[in-house]
Image (cartoon, rainbow, N blue to C red; front, side, top):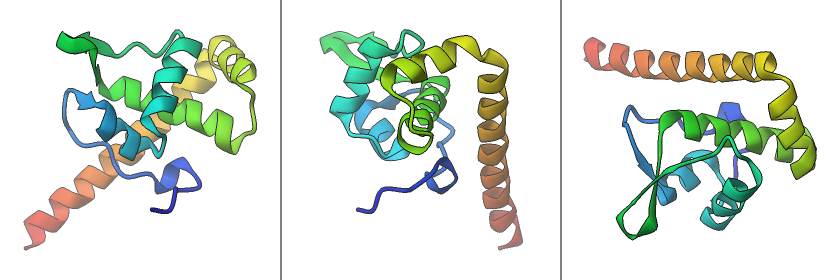
Length: 118
């Protein structure tokens, strides 16, 4: 499987409440062991843990992971630099997150439009 080069090429986030680590791995093009490592490095990332210590990520977690992925893989930040960027620039993070939400809603609306056309 080819890894997407940026967030625009990542698949849309389904309209679910919780996502298992495998789903998040595919949605964000990041291996599960990397997600577990990022939980230790980024305090903003706190999936819900249920029985058996299974992780359940919410939509905002998935968007945060995509943002972390962008900072590390596309913008070239170190882990420390990415953590500092997330801490020091909440307005920029909010803007990026809002843009992701808008893209997501647009994809979902286009899907609904296709269904209505047929």
